[in-house]
Length: 268
Length: 316
Image (cartoon, rainbow over all chains, first blue to last red; front, top):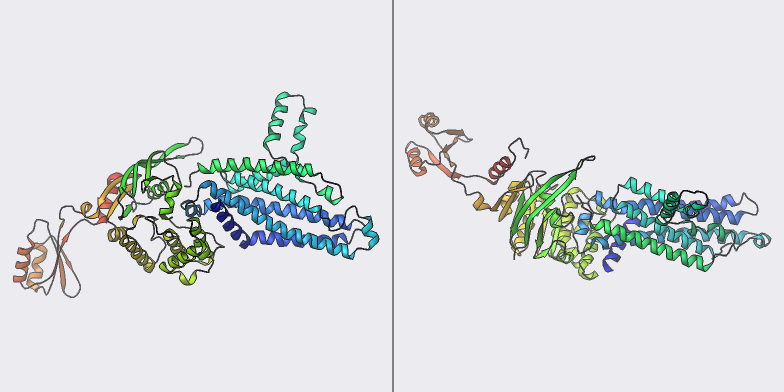
């Protein structure tokens, strides 16, 4: 555990000094700020627009960090051969890989926290400036703490995306790993449709294939509760708990597969 | 117990996209390195030196055969606490400082924070980077990164150090520093296994060498044994040669080479009796300055063995 923690710390330190995630976060915070200006143009809908744009920015920029840094974590180490220095220390390949994953999750957590603080700052400012009558018409409070549920689910979705990026980067090129991760992220949001494939198709093999794909690719739709929290719709605790449990299971399977592949890999 | 031993170590790579076929990078390498030795692993580019080191470090897996370090299989992670490794042209993390990188590595060895700090300061001083310890590695020159690589290989006071082309990218001062470092490691009983194609380094440093070519071991042994070929001849340097004697030299000796300051070198065959020749030359008025036997150098041996293994043209 100590070796994984040391590896995670090194990844975190390297990532926060890298300008790319730093600029992504700055850009996201700017976007959240701009959402306030946009909201001023739309009478009555201002708070929803800030929340919508803010959560979308959080999700999309988090995705960029998860994919581009996640893919680079292993491929860069192998391409530049810095992996030689580490794997010849008392560090197993599994510890190396899990340390990389934990480091990027820590980086994501910090970046999402910064974006969350920026979003709440804009929401508090808007609430403070809104007339009492307008506030009364809102479906949910301005700086609604329930938005944290959406953010926690975005974070757990990004943890799955990071595990996917790490998995693909253990055996493919950075370009392929990026495309495959991005592809699965898109597919993951429409995965629920495959479950009901039998209702629209008669072919048994096609239904069987759709069912297999449904179980193999990540089901990411349940992680998206942005619309619910923006409109003040209650998100059931059971839904959150099941979704988090699914994330934990899916991530464990991906990390196990990644370690299995990585353990056998030759570093030419 | 040998510090390093390999038994029939073989590595095949698959080459070709449509119809992959095996390419043998290392062929049944069997060798043994005793504790405390400085062992030179020599060969031309592409001979299998780095492949061997990667197999020993388990960065790649053998197709056949086995290897042990300090009596443990190379796959045993715990043996890595007792070894150090410098890769060829090493690269580390751009955004970490030398001190941070080495502290991270030291902590992986299990040292406490304060122990790690002390060790890091010591090894950075040893490789001449004490003043640059807080610079990020992206600001380092190639030679400085090589020094960081050496520092990380020595962090844990290893019993065995593996160095892959340690002089690569270093200026003459850096090369001298590495030579001195290898000698100091030997002095404290550390086993050093280094690969190189710079033969002068090996000749100056090694107790024993192995030469590989095309993935095969073509020579191995103590330097003095390997180079103890029969005498090739004698090289005699003299000065103050009278004009009359000068005119006769070409007919009396197979090779005559004029040097600066009125000096001349003549080459005598191995069967010549140098005492008699020198006495005769002195009697004719020449002043004998030096006499040296001509023997094979490591370079001669290297070229001979490599050519034998690869009869066609080879660039060294």
